[in-house]
Amino acid sequence: MTSTGLRPRAAWHTHPADLAAAHAVFGCLAREVATPADVTITGDVVQVWLPSTGVTLRCTAARLSPVGTHRYTGPVRHRPDGGPWRDLDAEGLASLVAAELTARTGHNNPEFLDQVRASRDTVAHLLAGRPAADLNPTSDPAIDAYVASEQSLVLGHPHHPTPKWRSGDPDEWQAYAPELRSEFRLHWLAVPDDLVAEAGPVDPMLAALEPPRPPAGHRVLPVHPWQVTLVPPTHPRVRRLGLAGAPVRPTASVRTLYSPDADLFVKTSLHVRITNCLRKNARYELTAAVALTRLLAGIPLSDGVAMLAEPAYRTIDAAGADEAYGTILRTGLRAHLRPQQTAVLAAALAAAPLSAADPVAWWRRYVGLLVPAVLDAWLRHGVVHEPHLQNVLVVRDADGCPVRMLLRDLEGVKLDISRWTSWPPGLPRQVGYDALQARQRVVYCLFVNHLAGISGALADARPGIEPALWREVRDVVAAVAADLGEPPELRALLAGEPLVAKANLLVRWRRDADRAAPFVPVPNPLGGRA
Image (cartoon, rainbow, N blue to C red):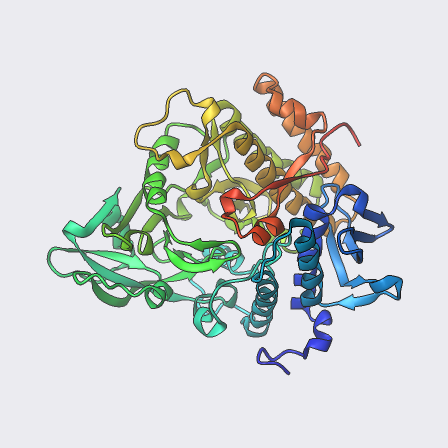
């Protein structure tokens, strides 16, 4: 047995954590690296040839997707030197992928193998340590259901090579892991008034968190308790007040925390690399959150869709401390819930088979809420939302039918500069996308990440239904296109122009910032009638 309480290396390939890691790497490889000529599908077997190293890989698909977001089952196998097929664990697969990418690019990435292994090991720790039920339920079933959805994503992004990689060892992060159903209190700093940078109604919002009383001439600043151990505050005039206030629950992003008592989100800086990025709040992201909240208040979303506002931030106005302790406050859920309604993270719906009495009718309602809102915001108002599965909360009625969508995280919201003749005052320029970037983000986040994920979950429960679901999407997109005067962006999608997927494997290999991630073409099931 290893230190994780798991089997030795020889048997890793049969462990759920290793299978999930291998499937994610294989799926990225088939989508981002292999050309269409390198991928063959025979029955339910997907086979990938790596021409630079001459390696052939294969894995069985439990579900084949019309967008290429297949769900895999069983071990990934390879065929060395044309001999018999042999099972691979995630580490062995990552080694073969690294050799192929090194041969293709001429560059090595010494981090890659360790990150795949560490992500796999994180999942193993989570599976071994996850409590069977929430240890800290509230008296509100709707809020408990929401928290459960945020803390349910044990396997993570199915098309990312290191979905659960986070810097630090389990002794450092397990107390703050959402997947372990954790709960804790914020750490509070007392910042002298003249060192505070802020905007919006910070103190009225923080009051709901029951902060400690600061010394005279100071203001309180909530920070993630993990961050205080990673980047201890060293400014001689900043005081540590310790852990206090209402308990918080980490959401799927790890660094954004939700307080059920206060019904408030606190988006903290966290100097931890999670999947791709160091999760700190840059100064422009703080000011942009408040500026975008004000701007978006005057730009309506479609009926049944709302944006969780981020009307306030506070940080320390000192070099090095502004990003380390920048905190954004986000409005809560209760104002968007009616009696017998619950909110659930969309990614949680996509993570398991999704049953509905009439899946097509359920889907028609789902798509009818989300798609017009996102496309109208982009093509009519030049606002690019990033509605991937972790940025959308689905409000459902007592029967489980979607009745409302909540978009969140203004960090991902940008303006399409080709649609803004003058730049809004007070908005940082980093919030702009050019026309190509805007199209890629909308198409990937809405169609490939989000809708392919949810339609796949419905198909896992009702095999063979995906073509009918994508016909429904086409009808909605066609209706939006007609309402907007047939914009060329939607005409191209309806004509079958390839969709695009964010290349998570390639951006990891290149060690680039997430914003620099390349996009690769994937099949478009909207083109024509099946």
